[in-house]
Image 1 (cartoon, helix red, strand yellow):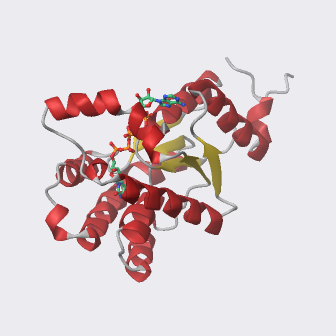
Image 2: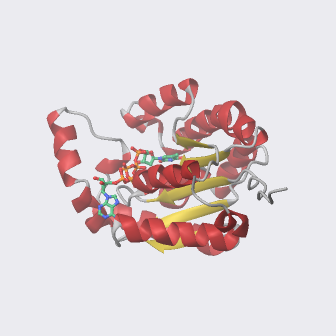
Amino acid sequence: MLDVPAKPAARFITFEGGEGVGKSTQVKRLLVRLNRMDIEAVRTREPGGTPKAEAVRAFILQGRSESWGPGAEAVLFAAARYDHVSSLIAPSLKSGKWVISDRFHDSTRAYQGLTGGVNDKLIQGLEELALDGHQPDLTFVLDMDPSTAFARVESRELEKALAQTGDRFEKEDLEWHRRLRQAFLAIAKANPDRCVVLPASQSEDSLEEEIWDTLTRRYPELAERKAG
Ligand code: T5A
């Protein structure tokens, strides 16, 4: 009989970091790689991922909750996350699918908590309620200077300006984004078993390789599978 390696156990992987560091790009690339190995994976994002959570996303990112302050916004993000976890993330993992999320709870810690000044007790309480034990197995924190990241999204910014849109948090100033960067680094430092910080200023290809190397070192069963 052929010795076919068992399918690797489903994992929950998140990508975090500031604006324009390349999270969405790497989430898509990872999904392609996993699918090529015949590993079922779901690509999702926060805020969003389910119809209800996407409705909350539109409300927040259009700036409609801005005057409510970061505390109320943290509650809104957690409400969206509660639906995302219970309707999509938990059932997907249970059925053996990998889940790759573009942002998750570390974004609330960084944006509303450490940078927005919302107290840790509220952030932690919301996290417990929304996650219901579904901590990511591994979090990639993509790190780079925000001014370089802004240059990357400049053309997209111009398109948004022309369309008279523009996301709620992309409007904050450079100094705010530098503090945000430090917030993500502090979260990674406090969670060394879960978080891996990678320099995001490298090319898309080399960052993809570094992500894959990290995954195969952590989950050697992935390295044993051959691409289909
Ligand atoms: N938020 C979210 C909170 O405040 N609290 C929360 O709890 C949560 C969950 C979400 C906003 O909500 C906030 C954070 C955000 O402000 P969003 O639209 O999802 O809004 O914003 P971002 O996550 O920042 O998404 P972006 O699309 O802006 O950034 P990405 O995904 O990091 O970057 P990406 O992959 O789209 O790439 C940006 C550009 O750079 C190029 C790409 O082609 C693209 O043009 N690029 C590279 N160029 C050179 N080298 C590389 N290595 C490159 N990688 C990508």
